[in-house]
Length: 389
Ligand SMILES: Nc1ncnc2c1ncn2[C@@H]1O[C@H](COP(=O)(O)OP(=O)(O)OP(=O)(O)O)[C@@H](O)[C@H]1O
Ligand SMILES: [Mg+2]
Image (cartoon, protein in one colour):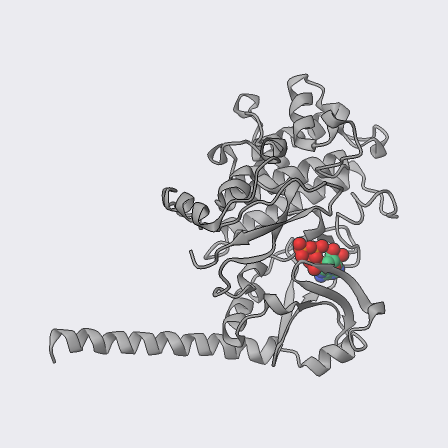
């Protein structure tokens, strides 16, 4: 055997081994976690409008009762979110293997013909966007203790995705509508790993990219640098929202109060952070701890990504295992600083990426189309992003 045939032989062997591993993975999910289209149609009464509980960037969500009696949230992916059955199943396998107290459980999926449907554990108390930030129509009272638990729970869920899952997962879309609450108000992060279900061959597709403008780290919005630090920035914004009970952007407020981070920084500098705590608490909160949470929000949203703490550190800061060092807090990356950006062409973005030094975190690309009017929890933007890079 020549050296080449020896090498070639080994390569064939290892690639066929890899293929059979993928097949095994796919068939292991087939057995336990696949639903037929008919089964999900029955569960949702033919995807009736009455059972529809929401709609997001990837498709519509229905409430349904499965054959085994379990109540599920059934997410029907829109046409552009679909990809080949094999790739889809491989990604689903990764997501459905992930279990954590603070992450929404994926029960399984349906892959039949063109249908791509995800079946999740149903959470009784909706999302933080609809309850805490939803304009006062919720029956849920968010006490200081509950808010504290929610902040710590979300931080633990995100720390798990960032630091325990291998390979780690960048969520890309941490925001109030992706934090769901169970019957005990335990927070569960939803939609993690979803970005990977978008077909990889979709290049330069104009789509609704992950992210609501006020949650976006400047380096992600401007240069398309997507790392765990961008998630940490979004978490910081969410943290400030939970303690203040206010959406990150509210154009109905006086100009100087419209962007919550700007306001938080201003009040921090004036040592008046306590004024930002939600008045719905009627003064019934631990002022020192609430101000500490705002400061952690500021640490997470610093303009320089490297200065933002890891999620494990954030958990320790929130629980008091570690002290917050005021000297480490620098100015946040502010949304208003990049609101005037114009849309840039993909070629420019590519050259930016080429100029970025490689790091251990992955990169993704987006351009920002701004100038949109911003209202509570609804602002999204259109982005052009190139999955081929
Ligand atoms: N597992 C679930 N249990 C209960 N309700 C859910 C569940 N998943 C989603 N929902 C509801 O469906 C709505 C739509 O969810 P979806 O994830 O499609 O959109 P979104 O989170 O608002 O936006 P995006 O697509 O950007 O994530 C949510 O806001 C929530 O109210
Ligand atoms: Mg969602």
